[in-house]
Amino acid sequence: MAEKRVTNPKSKAKPVRRKHYSAPALEKGLDILELLAKEPEPINLKEIASRLNRSVGEIFRMLAVLEQRSYVRTGDGDERYQLSMRLFQLSHWHLPINRLTSAAVGPMRRLALQTGQSCHLTILSGSRVVVIARQETYKDRSFAMRVGAESPVLSSCSGRIFFALADNFTRQALLEKIRDDDGSAIKSEKIVELEDTLQEKSYLEIPSEQVDGILDIGTPVYDHEGSVAAALVIPFLHRIDKDNESELGMVRECLLQAAKEISEKLGFISSI
Image (cartoon, rainbow, N blue to C red; front, top):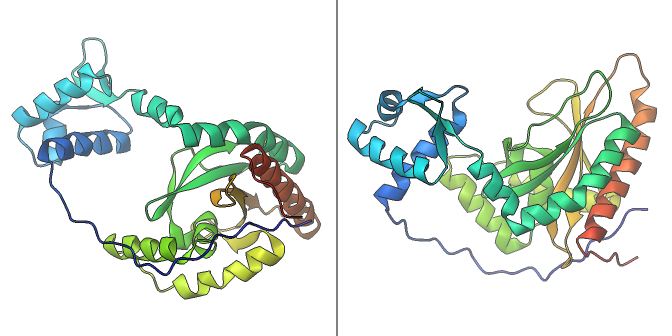
């Protein structure tokens, strides 16, 4: 049975535009971390400085501090830099994410076993959604999102869930952020209309906008206050050797049950 969410009063207040501040040293350090996060292989000091349009001297000092704090590392006898696991550890020390992933481990594992499909859990971060946990299936063929993968709010199943169920203040803040990031907000009005669908069915299905043959099926996960804490999504992989329509019914039911279990672990109490 579809569970009803607890709604909070919708605020009419407008988001406040924050003043832009500059902290050059911090910005340089963050630029280095973001660059190394995107590099598949370690790179040396000159390459880092060149890509960031900085002098070798200023980058060297920043790298020295980052290495002392264990955010970057080099191989034995090597002068090429790469990220350590420090940021990964920090993300899991963060209490809300830790609580979410801990609550989701069991239900997500059962969901993958029951459906033969992979699943992932996302949270809202700025104008994007980020995968914080995933569970792959035992099947030989599957499609899975990696932990840390990001997607635009208005172009992903989980992002549309967050946007459609947001209160007015959060929704306007998201639109401001999307515009600041040079994104398109044209889809926003249609996405707001999805709230009725989510209230009625408790899940959302949309074809993937990135991968052919994938149907994203998502449902919200609620916290103890009745707010959307995360979205649980199955990237349903269509098989030409199976009756996908009959399988979809089972997948939807298992997905809703898994989300209900996670929500209850977070303290959510259904009104029915």
